[in-house]
Image (tube, rainbow, N blue to C red):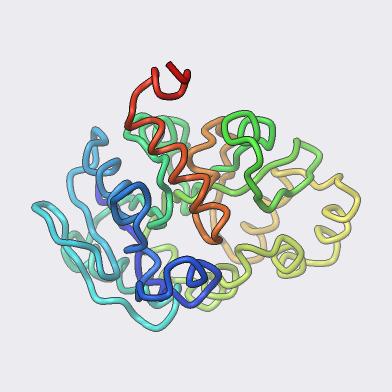
Length: 258
């Protein structure tokens, strides 16, 4: 399987407050290493992932093809999709990860792949709030209250490359609204927006509307894997990641205070 890392985000947001001299978010140091390194390591060690691609300034290593960043997130994604298809025109699925997942591990990636149903155009993990807050107390995330539970979105995707490119306009718009549940619901229509307001919206209803409106076969997979629900896009996230990774590197005795 091919895996693509989206690492082409310039450091122009809130992370710039902490590291104004670092040009790219993926290269911001966390516990002594560039943020993107944790993602590359996790994907490279995941069974079944045999070819890595990255869009953005990722340090080169064997088995990783690095593509230059484009001007925005969709164009970065499209560049990666087109490169994968040029290399492997029949690629049935592509695993996509953002570059800011410092807690990602091969085991977590494998569990997502195992949970993903076959034959879908897009599979997207959502993580229960309780699981995230139990693993990372104090973390700030965007939570969505639905009839099925309260969730945050994950930062892994399993996609059929040809399907995304076939609905480029829609994919670009939805990607642009990815951090705003209200705009996403509005994209899907007033009925779903009202369901979101009342907390009665069901995951299956969203999947059905996406299929009916745009012809995209999608599934949201509930996955109790907090590591894919916690990314780094503000200074508080950096502090949390650095603290937990340093404790993990020091071993269990450091965390116990002995």
